[in-house]
Amino acid sequence: MKILVTGGAGYIGSHLVDRLLEEEEVCAVDNLTTGNVENIQHNLNNPKFQFINDSVLNEELMEKLIKGCDVIYHLAAAVGVKHIVDDPLTSIKTNVKGTDIILDLAHRYWKKTLIASTSEIYGKSNQIPFDEHSTERVLGSTKIDRWAYSTSKAIDEHLAFAYSKKGLPVVIVRYFNSYGPRIDEKGYGTVVARFIKQALKGRPITVHGDGKQTRCFTYVDDTVRGTIAACTTKGAEGDVYNIGSNYETSIYQLAVLIKELTGSSSEITSTSYESYYGKGFEDTIKRVPSIINAKKKLKFEAKVSLQDGLKKTIEWCKKNYTF
Ligand code: UDP
Image (cartoon, rainbow, N blue to C red; front, top):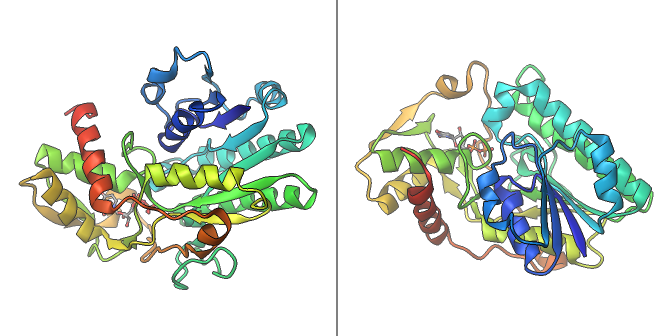
């Protein structure tokens, strides 16, 4: 099998490439906006691997690649709330146009496609846990840039369902706060990357607001396993799956745990959202996935504990971050 991974040099994409290369040939496309060539450096001499430094918006290139592959994992996107808030225009265009191009070509050449989406889809809904089929999406005003991410990925999902209605085998995964080696504070996994860096430097660990907001952090090996399960399980097509742990942690608890695991003397401080995101930011206060559908249909459940995952991530950060 020849697999095309868009966003293949990104944080999740590069881990996915590593796993797929164990059995398949892989072509990764990435324009290195939030991706990093160092994430795939170790694969560059592998004859089963090809890397192309270009954008999914290059339709001519994408046509050639999609024609020549068997399966598409579409992960290329503008990711990370901070990144979206800093440049909403490019983010919306990359996410909507990119997925439109990929799905149009997948439909033309009839290739199975996985679309990577996000738990941002649920917005600030308070129907906990977030269930793929019943939780209503609750978003704020369009004047608040943060919601552009959720909205652009929702268009991607609608497109995928529309192509599915035309018979295309397509499946969607929604990631819940993945973290692990290769996280980058400028892209995906912001809070974990920032807190580890701050703790290792002995600088204040900056918790936004009261730190009571919660997330379910999911180790990248679990994220990748869930992604492959969604794409390879027969009968999973035409649907969307939450891929995440349901172990809920507050941001303050995360700060305490990282301080402990790094043995840092950093103080944990409360800072305003505004100081980081700018004016008019709205946060998701509670985010927990329902894991029932993934368990039932994909036989997938996250396994790595937050402690173990953070230990591995901290080890990687110690070796790879420059201070
Ligand atoms: N956060 C924080 N300090 C930081 C960076 C982020 O307290 O230095 C908070 C952020 O406001 C949010 C949570 O951590 O409540 C998760 O942020 P992230 O950008 O990692 O992901 P999100 O879940 O918001 O997409």
